[in-house]
Figure 1 (cartoon, rainbow, N blue to C red):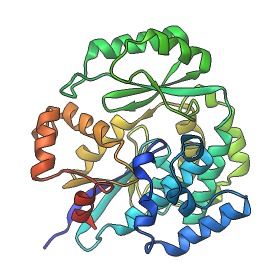
Figure 2: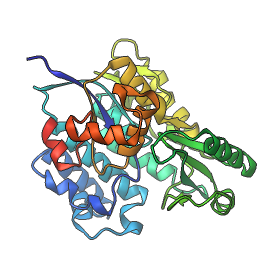
Figure 3: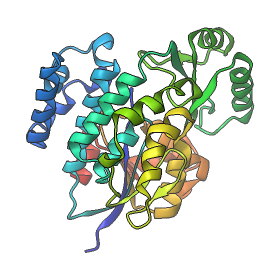
Amino acid sequence: MPKERIVVICPGRGSYTRESSGYLNLNKNIAVQEISWMNNQRKALNLPTLNDLDSNTFKSKTHMIGINASPLIYACSYVDFLSINKSKYEIVAITGNSMGWYTTLALSGVLAFKNAFKIINTMSSLTKDNNGGQIIYPIVNQNWQIDESINEMILKEIEKVGAHVSIKLGGYIVIAGKQDALKKLLKKLPINDKYPFQLPYHSAYHSSIMSSVPEMAFNLLPESLFIKPNIHIIDGRGHIWSPYSTKISELYSYTLNNQVTQAYDFNSTINVAIKEFSPDKLVLLGPGNTLGGPIAQILIQNSWLDIDSKKTFTKKQKNDPYLISMSIKEQRKIVS
């Protein structure tokens, strides 16, 4: 029986939430040596181990700061990736959102496990202090279809205050800016349920506010850490890096420069994933399912598999899920 083709998607910052508590320890018999190594590295820095973080009561000021959140998310995603049944599924490409790009590099063989951990920690440290942050705001109607009038309004307000589009995230725009600009937007943007919402402990990622970061990153992280991917990967522009044609110097530069200082277009990554690779399923690694909605909204924008509204997406997910979220127990069983 032929294997089903899947594209794997790695989540970014903010995916480990209160509901994710205990997620890493659920699968503690997988990647035992790797998790132990990371724990020892953190102990040497007087930081809580990943297993302790995962076991302890969730506290935003502890679990959502970069030095804790990023490696914890990386560990959870790494374990989930190893849990996929490779005898049943062929992974044809890997992609991710924001910090998930670093996980993508690890899972595709570009970065050795330990080198990815080093880069994740280094980049978390370099990007934490810039007096900036991120706001998220929806641009869809109740059917999860893009409302162009809202989209245009948001873009105008972003320009007025000197902020930046940080991430194009399905039916959401993530906005990066200095705190004074974000305060203006929080007051100006119309209230829509819980939005506008400032993402706690986030910096102004994927914007020119990070312009000082690349030089420091290049000095701390040599190109020798990178090799060619062993599987196709899709970056935050929708560009495909192939095992056969990737130039390591360009991948290195993109990772430590372009994707740090320019907007991350998650919409393009998923558009390319479905149209260029035509997978039988999309598999979203844990922790959490915060990318589930944005991925569904991108499918709706494309009317992919006749999914053209929240209703049709929900119906398909019940009958024959196209998007598999490994943090959902019933769906995890499908691919593990």
